[in-house]
Amino acid sequence: MSACGYRFSGSGHFPAGVQRIFITIFENKTSEIGVENALADAVTSEFTTRTNADALAGSREDANAVFSGTITSVQITSISRIAETVSDEARLVITVNARLTSSDGIEIWTAEQVSSTATYKILQNDKQVTDANRSAALDRAAVKLAERLYNRLVEDF
Image (cartoon, rainbow, N blue to C red):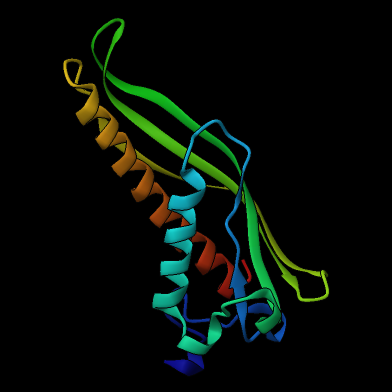
C-alpha cells in the first residue's frame, strides 16, 4: 500500500518539520458566547487523539509552533418550518480562519474560511430544551471543524 501513495486521512505529519505544537484558544469575533471554548476543547481533543503525547506542548515556550485562529462567524438559519413564521429545525454553521506559526512568528500554514455545520431541533414550547439542542449542535460542529482543521494541517491541503 505504501508504494501507491495511499494513506489514511490525517496520517500525515505537521508541516515544515514542526514537532511540538501549542494550541491557543481561537479569538471569537462573533456574538456567540462560549464558541471559543467549545472549539478549543474540540481542537485539543482532536490533536490529543491523533498525535503522540509529545506532539502537544503545554506552553508556547515548549513548542516550536503555535496553532491559533479566529472564529469569524456563527450563523444560524432555519431549515424546516411547521408554519410560515415558526421554525422546527435550524442549521448552525461555524466558520474560522486558522494558522500555524513558528515560535519566531513566521507563518507556516493557513486555512481560510473553514466551516462546519450541525442541525438541531427547535421546540416552540421549551426554550431550555431548544438551548440545550443548540449547545449540543455547537459542540458537534466544533468537533467536525477540529477534525477538518487537523486533516488539512497534516495533509498540507
